[in-house]
Image 1 (cartoon, rainbow, N blue to C red):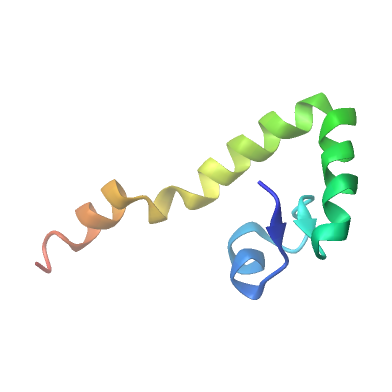
Image 2 (spheres, rainbow, N blue to C red):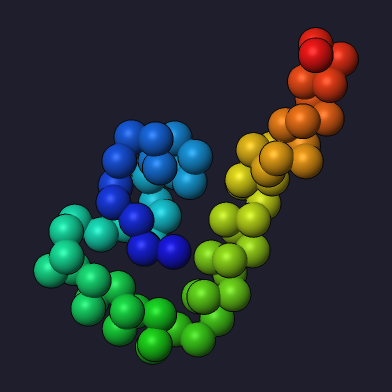
Amino acid sequence: MLLNKHQANVALLGDDYPLYCEGISSVPEKLKLLRENKHLYSEISTYCKKVTEPYRMTNVSAAIADIL
């Protein structure tokens, strides 16, 4: 997932996330990185799923069920 290096993205994915873009001009460079590192897409996908798991609707709704 190509993302801007916004503070919210950094807070979730970390400062070293390899697919931050510094604008549209850096997109070709990041696509080249993905093309040259076939394993990177799979690793990034797994990592993103892991760090976003607490924010998935099923987990959030389970967490607030007692409150509602």
